[in-house]
Image (cartoon, rainbow, N blue to C red; front, side, top):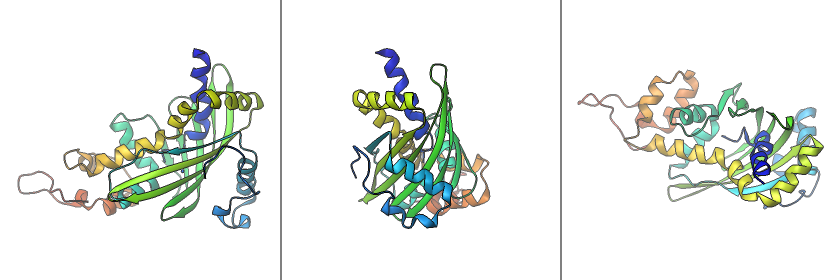
Length: 257
């Protein structure tokens, strides 16, 4: 039993490594193409094929209510839109070991520091919804290298200073043996899978709450962190308090974000 429990998060890691950067889902979705993405022809052929495979024949699918964040909506979205900044802040705070690299505004490389790595592409952005396609692999001593894909829909509900995220992930595991094992494990360790899927949302919430904490030191960390100017400006736009100059006592003048 201990060995089986050990493998469960590793099988799921290939689909969740990029969700640091989300319909109840207990079976295959209806239709050959997700309506939420609009026209199939709007995407390159390889992307459309990958989406269809995950959508029509998911190895498993889960819906998770992520950790709520007590922050303004625009602050939460800023950290969601810049997962590499969120990951860097999380490493500094020892909240997680994810490493992400932004290739452009819609493509990211990622690794979880535990053998999983992959690439994610934002397929659609809406004010309260983000849809991503991630493709990755995990290498371990028992099962070797396992690859897979995930189509992830993240829905956001802002309410009275709190952002409530809900993530739905459709996962396709390429290896048949690993896929069969994942189906068995999900029935026994569903809560473990949900925690793994929600890990990125937990980290995003904790980093965003740190950023708006007046005594938390986020602005000082941001000033030292080597970020591209455009990414730093995006954070400052959501957190004008960090752009404030020093006050008369030599400290940073903090304003409400």
